[in-house]
Length: 87
Image (cartoon, rainbow, N blue to C red; front, side):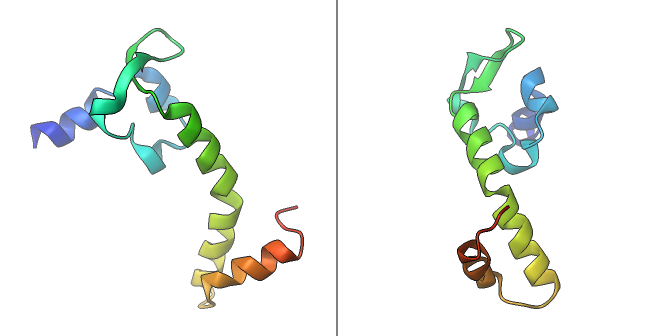
């Protein structure tokens, strides 16, 4: 239980303020060895890449979520992309 609590409780300020925290939760503690933009230790060295990736896939994930909620196949994202989306 301590490990799970520490994994979240020891996140640096930059992580706690991040809009994609829900997706990575700081990732694995063994990868948290750089300083955040505030100078706090404990930022994941993959943070920039994760941040870019999660922002890149967000519109596609949102579309697939809407498809699932409408009981349609999320694979419809392929047609949506071929139609020039996201716009």
